[in-house]
Image (cartoon, rainbow, N blue to C red):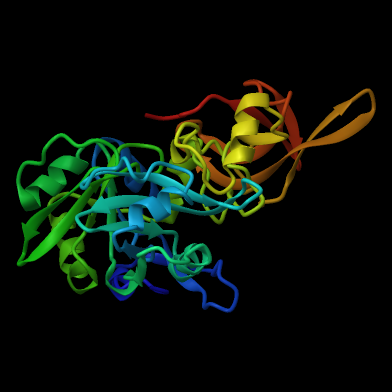
Amino acid sequence: MNHSPLLSAHETAGARCAERPSKIPGSDASSVVLTFGDVPAEYAAAHSGCALFDSTERGLIAVKGEDSASFLHGLLANEVRSIAPGKGNSNLLLSAKGKVQFGFDLLRDDGEILCASEPGEAAALIAALDMYHFVEQVEFEDRSEGFAPLSLRGSKAKSVIEELVGPLPAMQDHDHIRRDWNGTSLRIISLEVAGSEGFQADAGAEHVLSLWTALTKAGATPTGQVVLDILRIEAGRAAHGVDITDDIYPQEAQLDRSFSLDKGCYIGQEVVAKIDTYGGLNKQTRVLRVSHDDPVAAGTPLLFTEDGETRKLGVVTSWAYSFALDTGVVLAYVKRKHQDTGNTFSLGEGEATIVDTPLAV
């Protein structure tokens, strides 16, 4: 969906919102919640409490038919056929040149495979998959309108969900189960949120306001995009559509959990395998501590001067203020041979130094 069904409720609650341009040409911009009014408290909840994020703009497609698993397995960069119902993974659709076209969470369900896409990308993902569809018994269905996931992370995230549905079993990454809640079926997914273990809960668009309210009453702290960006950058996680575009190889963005080197052929597999075997990446993401806390624009170069010659050795893609370091941090692509921790570059009027991640646990 283009706009969160919770937007009016967020605005009534005093949330600060901003317009987010669409990544799809010709599509309308959407609104994103920056903060609910207390960024330090939201950040603290994401570690020692339970931070609650509105993820309802994500898309969802269902791939059905007796050939769905084998069809997707031959296209996608990560496992599909070996994924059992109730399990899943992070997955990619690459170009023939091995570059990232789409990133999504894949869930295997009884009789179908679900792909939760980035906001606004569900229709484009279906179109991209359908290009390879010839005689296979496969059907695609866009379920984005009814999909309304909420994301939770922090040390108390599990206990907050258990307040609603009772004890949860031990769950691995991308495991998903259903529980009855408030007269409907609630899907609960164990899912990384901004670089840390978390959960996603989806009761559908019709019940999302009730779910949001119930989770906050159970102790979750409504949290906005400002803190989400801080958390992911402190963890060194690149974001699709922000740091990851269609000219990026998965290894450049450190998406190692999203592709397989052992599953056999898939689109772009030969390039991915050559990079793994022979190296040759020209750049890779790094987190850098900035010498000030002023925002740094995407596209700002990392410069290094030696013997009177100034060279561009990297480029910033994201900035945030880091509570862990009490200064600004950036996520940037840094050229090879210059990616070691401690390397320092000129960045606008200040400096930026590569640091180890994660910055906070």
